[in-house]
Length: 368
Image (cartoon, rainbow, N blue to C red; front, side, top):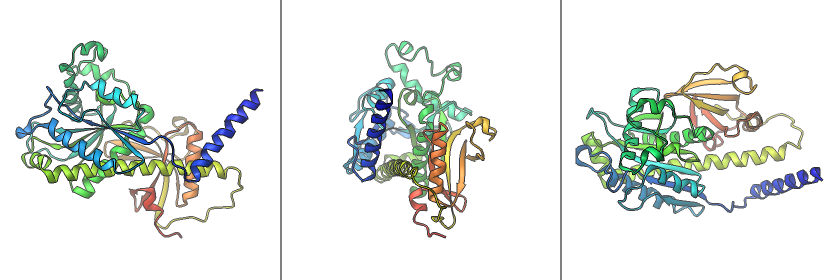
């Protein structure tokens, strides 16, 4: 009887995979929760007289409008007006919606009026003073909430000890969060030529409370007179909104490609491989299995028995890759092996001349 149940479950899973491979759209839309930082009695930072809460809201509404042009994307807002929303409520909105992504938009501030550029944060332990200061600034909003000591289990935004005890609640989603942050940062840098301050980790409460890939993006410094004016302008808001929207779309497309690749891997397990004939000129495919601020030894015992792990430092993070091939199909086999080893959130990446590019772009390259 038990064996029959297992067979039935496997058969149902195979049918669902098979229907997806035939191009049928999933019933659940891709849900994105957009969070405009601050609001209401919390103005955010007031660098050069600008209002962070208004700029963040204007941009979030524009990003949502762009995303809603896609029929398979559902957009949910934590706020659409100038109201105060507690940090934990913002996360609850995303969790209750079983969202695929959570994106929080903020404007930066610094003691130095020359500081400028964009940076996007994922949840993690800060590894420098600047990241800690950002976390303290963003988390201090909880002082405006009633009973914040109870709500956040005694967390004190101004107590460094509170951050030492902050565990990586989002560890399961760290790789996807970093991928999304990287896509958004690349759009700021490549399309808008904004200064790239990188993808960073910090102990941000609003990210700690969510249960999906989540980022907090700082779109620029209001304390910088020129950048503040740009962010407050119609042109600046339009361009920043477009960059965030395109970053989200690129992330979504990369995830869809991974799902499609996994489907093909399931189908191909019943076939006998006779070699690979899909090698691309100048392209290297690898599987990213992990990322973090710690430089781990690349020995198999640190990576669930996988051999040949590469470690690369990108911005402030160390990224770990498995496999190295110019064949897309062999890359997908490496991906299947990584997932089988326990890296369920691993995904395929591509490099050209040592620079990371999208897999879709890599597949447009000529074959050998």
